[in-house]
Amino acid sequence: MKVIINNKEIEVEAGTANLAALLRAQGFTGVGQAVAVNNRVVPKADWEACGLEDGMKITVIRAVCGG
Image 1 (cartoon, rainbow, N blue to C red):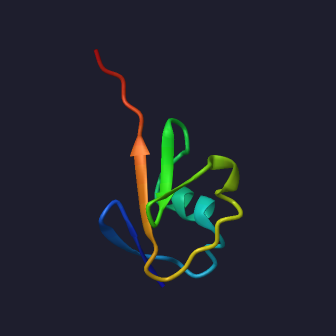
Image 2: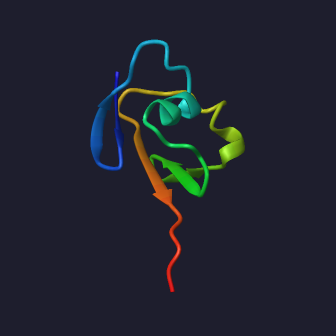
């Protein structure tokens, strides 16, 4: 199955159970990050319960410091 993370198509490896596992596999730690699936924010507490579907559009936003 394929999903899109930040406008980049990703092939999901077999056995990737949910959004949390996918994000970990892609190197996202969850610290200082917000995630939206198909333009709907998914609270971090729900990442484990969020299943994956072919064609999902996932946006990961990272908080940055600035002055």
